[in-house]
Image (spheres, rainbow, N blue to C red):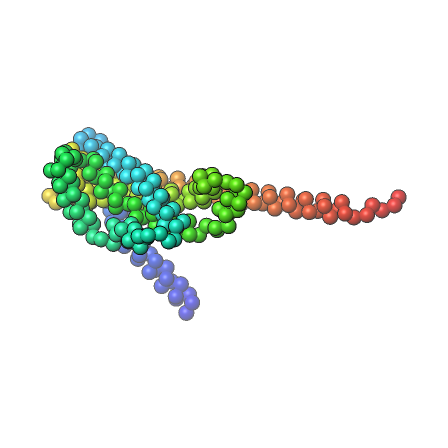
Length: 296
């Protein structure tokens, strides 16, 4: 019975992996198809990759998406970390409940509502002050930052909640200033949360469609919007080639991160073994020094 359960478990896991990764594999395979009909295989060819390399619309969209995602990730990490630090450090202040609700609102509200609200806000500001002049990179950046701040704030708040308060209290008792405590103790402890928030913000920004559709301009169309507009008129083999390139980039990043994490864990384990060996050697030396020397 246990052998049967094991086989059923393996079969179910294989079906799950096939369900998730078979479409991705089909994109990679058909990106090398010579036929202009994306679903009909003729023979092997790399012509669609050459088309992507010379497609000015796609290249401009990639440039806009990457620059926008980088700006969004840095701004959302900076503001979100400050918000998370405030929520974790000051448990009681006037309006805290309202402040926390406003921080979490972008994650709860439908993105369509947020996009329409920001669009109406920018239209009203343009009519009153003349800024912003139409929709473009600035409006996209503001919308994406608003969308990503909540994720960074919650990540940092959760990490700060897991930190022992005795560390910061001990530093203050020893005379450290608030800034010194933050940069020497708090910041290193939340570094992983900041990196996670940055990566999450970058991913959300570069993959966003709804917010970008409301706030983009004619010269700032992002890559997801370009792909969506082309998919409306049918399957384009060039999209398979572009998707394969994106999969390759993501795969390299994930593999590099896994290698870096593995090396870091191995280095930590090696340092721990060296420290334990040194401690054991020091203990043996101390015990040997305490023994009486026999008379000769």
